[in-house]
Amino acid sequence: MDSHHHGINGTAGSLHTMIPIQDFRKTHHLPPDFGVATFAPKDYTGLGSIDRAGDVLHDVRTEIVAAVPERKPPQGWMTFSLELQLRFHRLLRKVNPQIGLRPSEIEYAVAGFGDVIQTYTLALMKAQSSGRPLPDFLPVYQHWIDDSLLVARTEDHYSHNGVTWRVRLVKTVYGVCGLRVETTNGATFVRDDALACPAQGFMTRLLMEIAAKLRTAFENSAIHG
Image 1 (cartoon, rainbow, N blue to C red):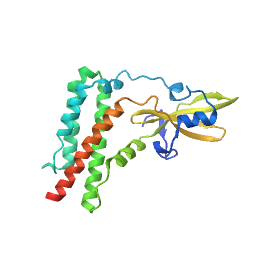
Image 2: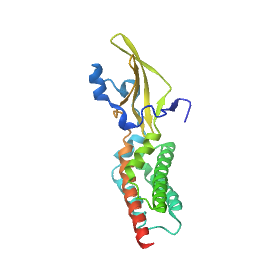
Image 3: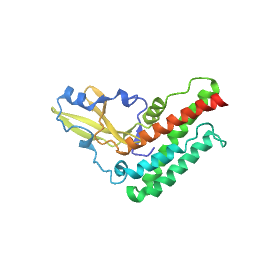
Image 4: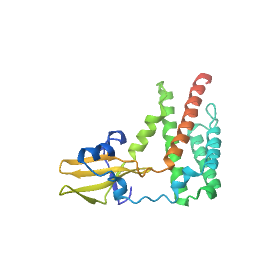
């Protein structure tokens, strides 16, 4: 966490509890262009191209998903999850000439990939060892995203009906996701995906496919010992 942001500390709860931008505009009779784009420049010169790389990313996804075993690997699950992260790193670097990511963006994507896989793997291990049902992936993934919610320290101002609102950007690991708008009625958290990172779709689909295979492998391991 850097000096430009601070934790949301549960004030907004999660992305699901934020008010949709369309509803906020309607309530306050705001123009259709009011939103995150008003306060943040859209610049995805690097990471934004990851979702337009088509064939090469399809190959990356195919190879990574195929690497997940059908049951517990000899080296154990946590070691495997680290090896999968390294494989993803190698594949991204290999295809990067067709994508055009900056080195820091590759490292960021790989770190997030590894964190999610290890978090879900650990959740599966804990459930299996305690005899509880294996957890679904999406709630674990959503919790991981919600944990990354940050409110920018930098404050902008917006004049509306003679009143000045104080506005801050709200971000997750995937980038800007909304606004914290402080009006005379207090602070409201508003969801606006206008600047959503295009890479989120690719990463979410990839992680969901891996998670499905991981869960199946844990089920197979329990059946076959």
